[in-house]
Image (cartoon, rainbow, N blue to C red):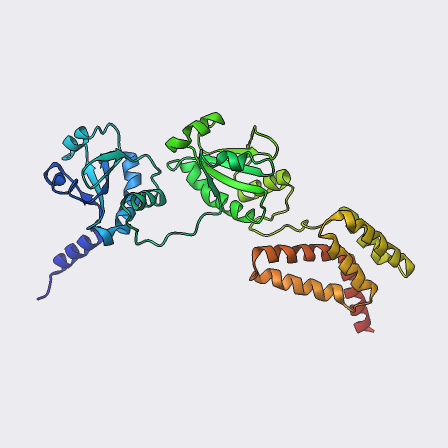
Length: 371
């Protein structure tokens, strides 16, 4: 049997508009809730702006448990329409109100975040039912709460940037992708931490109040060795955050990840490198000895300066040019672990301290070829 165009359109519309959110009314409430299956119930009003914002997220949450309708309920009640008696019965005074109902009908208010991850995490925790959505990788931003805050933000050996945000805050949502990128960039820095606190979470409200958080997002910087934070008042671009943290933490991270061109560079060694290439004979040997003595107090990166000098003293042909090209090629591919890429970037930066010599070597080769 063929369906008419109108019937086909109606069928297609029904499929598209099908929802896994169960609609509850006074007529089906008692046969659904308290009958063994736990569930989350949203009490909403059609005219409510916050309800409209929550609606697509709530649909996704219901989809995540569509495979387990016999174990857990994701439902809604029009508490300003047909379901108004239910709203009155359960003390609903604002919209949207979410409540968790146990299998026996007892209930408690839901006071967590209203984003997808928060809702799904809550339902899975309460019901023991896993969603059918593959969880995203854990964020690079360290999430703190009232229980973990002091151990991290007030650690005397760490510099910590903390954003206080709220799940419903539009400015927070706009900032989140950028803040995540910054957290990823600074992840290799064990003592320069990028963290976040849900300042609207009931358990964290006293913490937010303690640090004078009156709006979202509020960003504070906790410097090592201090307990009183500094208000972050800079811009909210990736470059702004990276510049601020590099200055405060003494790091050399680059926008987009990795290290900047100054990472690993040492002013005194840079000066010696410049002198080294205008020196000849015994003067070079003397400068190498001076560099070796300085290396004892200059840190790990100094060994790379010494290695370059030793290669050149030994007359390794074309070392600077070849090694520079090799390291640049590796950095472009970015196929190694972040720590290894940082190490290679430092070596490349130190080779750049000898850049005049690289250019001179290339010019000499060109002149020879022309002759």
